[in-house]
Image (cartoon, rainbow, N blue to C red; front, side):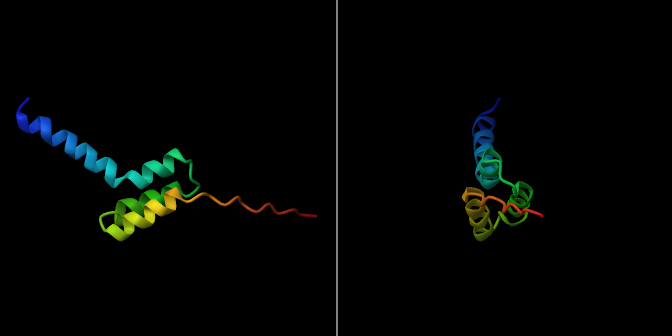
Length: 71
């Protein structure tokens, strides 16, 4: 292995983890909208605003679904 390999792969891996951090948080929290958060992160995560929106959405707690009672 060359010196370039020792420095390139850790930074590449760290960047990938940071880019998909909202998706990882959503997966760890078992969010209902995991696919939507992932797609937002994938397509708009390159913009800072899209990444922040995905991060806030992933960190926000899910509201319980309202139960409907039928008579």
